[in-house]
Amino acid sequence: MPVTPDQQAEIDELRSQTKPTLRAVSPGMEKHLYVAHDVLDHGFVRVVDYMGDDEAICQAARVSYGKGTKSVQNDEGLIRYLMRHWHSTPFEMCEVKLHVKLPVFVARQWIRHRTANVNEYSARYSILDREFYIPRAEDLAAQSVINNQGRGETLSGDQAEQVLRYLKDDANRAYDHYEDMISEVDADGNAKQGLARELARMNLPANIYTQWYWKVDLHNLFHFLRLRADSHAQYEIRVYADAICEVVKDWVPAAYGAFEDYRLGGANLSGKAVECVRKMVAGEKVTQETSGMSKGEWREFMGVVEG
Ligand SMILES: Cc1cc2nc3c(=O)[nH]c(=O)nc-3n(C[C@H](O)[C@H](O)[C@H](O)COP(=O)(O)OP(=O)(O)OC[C@H]3O[C@@H](n4cnc5c(N)ncnc54)[C@H](O)[C@@H]3O)c2cc1C
Image 1 (cartoon, rainbow, N blue to C red):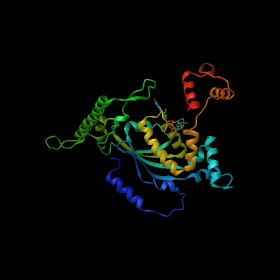
Image 2: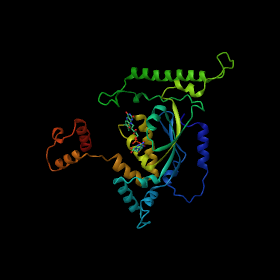
Image 3: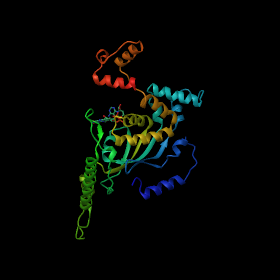
Image 4: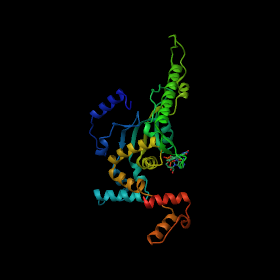
């Protein structure tokens, strides 16, 4: 269940109340505020709070000059300039606080992004729900033969069915034992001491769901999204990044547009690669052998120039 009835009631109550404010408001973000966007089978991402908008980025960048000749056209141009020239601090003026429900193995990748503030559900204090990420059959892929960190072809019918059976059975068995260990009643209904939650959680698999609040500024969020909305990122974290991209697009349309163009859609070229491009434009034939690049670099370079 992505959101519990209690959480939904809280969301409905929060969305039913409005308060007058003098603060910057992003109309696009207001429609996302508190709403849970489903991700994977039981996960979600929802905006709990935010600060700033496209104008706040420009305001910070223009602090030395005052508002000057401000216009929407100028704002967008300025934001594109800032993104193009790697000016980071104006983007740090915007912040977002997300409530995320995600499998533990996804959380392990996510938490590597250190430039955020996190508060996680405590499995020492509370009992975890019986909720495990079970991939869809079409997402069960074989180990890639060309990329040790990737997936190859989708598993066929019988094999996929067996994998799904293992995942479900193992998760449920582990959870049954977890419940039994923390239970304060034995099989005969007699009182017993339950094992501490902080210990009982040890046997739970990495596909169990956890939840956290994650607060990050826009500069570091873009860094996260560039890495995790990328095709090289694992599918299970990429779908979260994709969901966040949809939110950021509505929150700060100009900044997201610049990010999409320069970072998600753009490419970094090495000195050797730039030299090759110059030669190609001049009509010269360039090969991997004459480029000075390794095979891997050349493959990636051709991926950029050939699309
Ligand atoms: C496709 C992919 C595969 C990966 N594979 C692996 C893997 O096999 N093993 C593995 O361990 N990790 C792996 N990672 C994680 C990766 O190495 C980074 O830890 C993760 O992406 C977080 O990036 P970051 O440190 O730039 O982000 P953040 O922690 O958010 O930091 C943002 C930036 O702040 C600066 N910064 C933050 N903290 C410090 C600090 N203490 N000192 C100096 N500078 C700092 C750095 O410039 C950093 O780039 C992988 C990531 C991706 C996207």
